[in-house]
Length: 109
Image 1: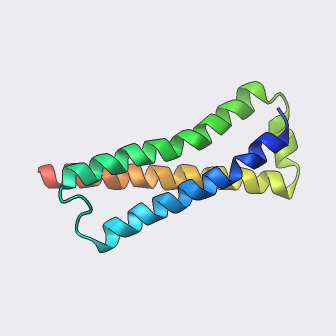
Image 2: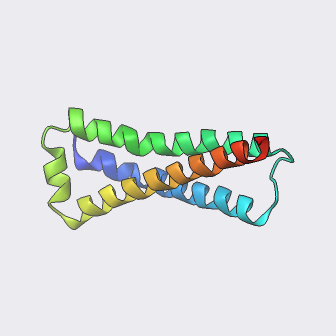
């Protein structure tokens, strides 16, 4: 696997981070998006899991199919930036999962 494959996925990660920020902002400034906390939370959990799946797939590719790709990626600034973007996307997705789960559980009790 070459580094071009990972660079092509960069825009996908950026779009997913922006989607997470948009969803989080909507829930921050609106009381509800769909009219139901259960639906809002379910959408958040599913969206967060989808966002987290992309960096996780990239990590699996690096660990199992890359054979030295991790060393090549971490040797330059572009590779470190790509890894940082993956971590940012993973964190953003995780936060959306947590927000969605709190939205579901917070209204049930």
